[in-house]
Length: 479
Image: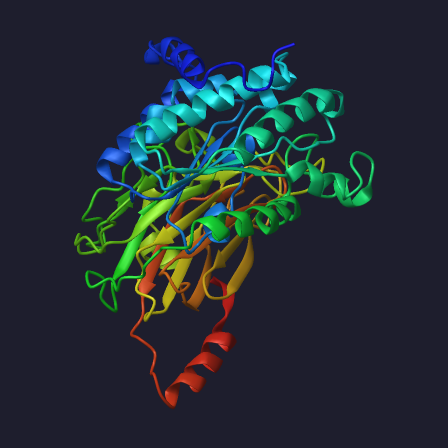
């Protein structure tokens, strides 16, 4: 019988390099190309904390918030196996020169017929590829944990976890995080405390990810201290307004909003995007412009996957500016991002949970948000908009169905904007947005306006300003 470590690391690595030689032939190349293109336009921090792996990394919407004091890069690929990660490891991991990597991979391999030793071999190939480029990189492997739908794989999971745990114990800069023990303690597989951590047979819900964070963060932080440094944004001024058009811009399903618009404003648009395609966690756009077309150093990073559509799927083609204000521009309201996630077992499809992080904000300012979504359809559909900065704000908007419009003959929202006032970012100048399905089949976001407010007083007026902010809160306004 082979000993656990009888396969030399160099030999494993050589096999991985040969198998990965034809990059264009690899699965998920379009995902990699998207990230690479955006990374070139908006370079990401080196020395990051990088999360890589399959769908449980992709679906970890709050990972940037759970590790808000780290420079996080999220590189999850739904359905990926360890071989897929290794074939693309240069683009997924090595090029970012991370100081630490958290990897979740191997569970799909076992579900598709691999055995535990094969997963261990892939782990060795991953470690070699990363640490050859940067030997001091800390690598945290998340043990393959029990899930409701893969009970039959447990013996293979135990083999893979055992090999990887033992190997990590004997090697510097390698760490095994024992998720299986923690989930077993909840009563896997039939225990209620275990079952209620999942949104389906193999994926976690928010409570499950909260548990992940409680396990993973202390282990990471004990080795790699938080290092994010806040820098005041001198490019952003009080009174600056940022407009963003979410949606396709292929001409058929949607268009860029070209500035100056009818109101003299300039807009930000998403990267070139065809209708009916996904926007992936980890995608990003940097240095947004204000309505005067001046770069203001604010960025937007996708944290949970969206889909998009528009012109041919019920977008608002003739908005009334008297109702929507500066958001009432046809190219902005006719297309949209949408999500289907609700976090409920047997509910919506949480593959499309819909979320992003706004970064680069000056934490001495507060911010007003105006958010608009619509879709013309007979089904009543409601979207929950949630913002998290130094506090949490949320509101529900009916985007579709009878009673959502002011105009006759349109079963979509044409007159209601969700507004949040005096939102403060967290200590690093970040605000997190979450789009959740509250009722119906889909939740929508088509356009967003952010206004930076004059800094609040620092002395006696602070209390009064805080009270005013609480009173203002978040509310819906029909104009």
